[in-house]
Amino acid sequence: MGFRSAPQLKSSAQIAKLREANLIVAEVLDEVGAMVAPGVSTWELELKARAVMERAGASSAFLGYAPGGSVPPFPAVLCTSRNEVIVHGIPSKEDVLQEGDILSVDFGCFKDGWCGDSARTFPVGKIDDEAARLLEATEQGLARAIEQMVVGNRLGDVSSAVQTHVERRGFSVVRQFVGHGIGRARHESPQVPNYGRAGRGTPLNRGLVVAIEPMVNVGVPDVEILDDRWTAVTRDRKLSAHFEHSVAVTDDGPLVLSRP
Ligand code: MG
Ligand code: MG
Image (cartoon, rainbow, N blue to C red; front, top):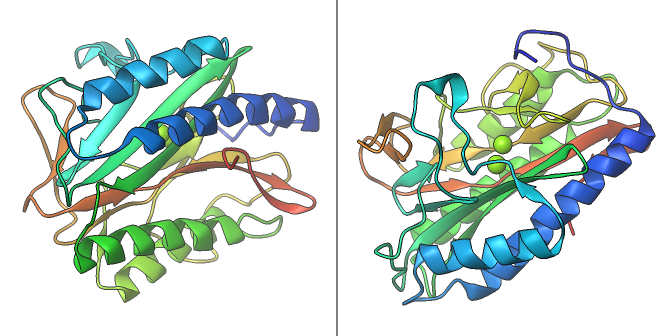
């Protein structure tokens, strides 16, 4: 299933299966989020995520993932991305949360062959005004994008909604990583950039399911990959936030599959 093939539209029954997988994702993020506090390591969050996932009878979409064989297999079920880490941070006992940090947590799993994927950025204790504004702008950018997920719109309407909102608030959107279609595979066509022009791109038809995932930086949008070949950080080492929902286009409007 390549990114360039036509999107595979899902039936109502298939969307119901995707909803089940995504509800497990939401449960994991709820339980992990409730643990986020100064002094907690990202490895402790990883163990909680594994426990909740196993209890739900799901399997990880991230653990062992090695796209194209060009990178070492991802070693965890969670991506834990703190402060200047944009995405794909690796949980570790040495990575201990501190008051004032922000922590992005991304989780994906398979349930009965269908994939769920969602991410949230959590404040650790009390965060400063700039960090709070970043989280708010990123989450609101995602909300604006979700509103565009209606029959008759095009993918460019979704992308443009994120970019417009985020840039108006003085932040930048990452270009190097994008959202994606989701279904039986963790990544399907189409790609969903967080920048673009309204009115352009793939038409949004009933049954299209995509993961929309703005990654938003305080400073420059540029990305650097660390030596572990996974951890993506901002080039200027300023803060970055990430929110993600899996969303279906239905006759009744946008259906957010990963919202509890
Ligand atoms: Mg994700
Ligand atoms: Mg995703």
